[in-house]
Image (tube, rainbow, N blue to C red; front, side, top):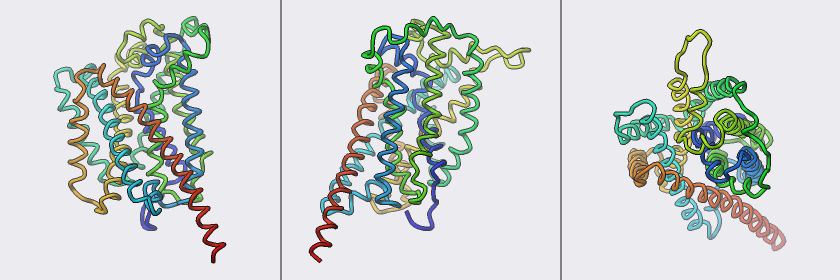
Length: 372
């Protein structure tokens, strides 16, 4: 990071991370967990995945302190063998980013067509969102961070309203028994939550380069990370409590159904689902912004050509083609499962080799001091 570039605070990065996570799987996670475990213990899987995410954030934040102002890719590149290793890691990040962006935007288009624009082709919805996202990332890191800061209070306020409005409708018998079939189903549910939680961690590999060393505060970032853990846990719990397990298993977008259950006294607003979808679009937009910006920054760093006008069209084409490679929403969700596995591999690989690189270079420096 150059001195003239925008500097991100720990609070701002925490909000960016929250906004990125909230756009992933928000409408479908109750069904995903039911399909995986078949018990009402999905909320425990979310808490475990959230705890793993917080641990990874803590570890990587401390690793980043050894190379402030640099991305993980740039840190890898500085070593004698780092040139090719950094290129491989950059390629991995690009592939992962294209896949997760394709899955998110395809699910977004399916939802919009199902609830709002039933006669609009999916291709038009996807292309429109990609163009809007491209404009957002043109404002670079500062613009993207400020958009997250603007959307965050709106999204969280609406989600909290939906949750509070449904509390009285919860039948707590649907949430029992807790651990009725033991711990194994809870562990089996963790893969269903890797994309929203672990999938957001790789953005730290790039965004933390825009933080000053005194702002690398894992406790602050983790404190804010409790918000998506709470929101996802509450959404799953209320979806199960209001609709029951069997109903959640057959609904494509269970979260939308609990929004429909809300009745505003006086009939001031007859239907809340279009309003909720509008807010959800902001969450999706935030997710796509973060991922799109990462791809732009990685390409600029690897190709040493900042501001190239061909990067954005290239990303749009790759994401568009990948989004429509699956022929149905079932295949999209299978691709999402693959993305979840890749997110774990990418995150663990980055943290592991980052730690090993620090240790090896530290030993080399000590040897050089002794020789001199």
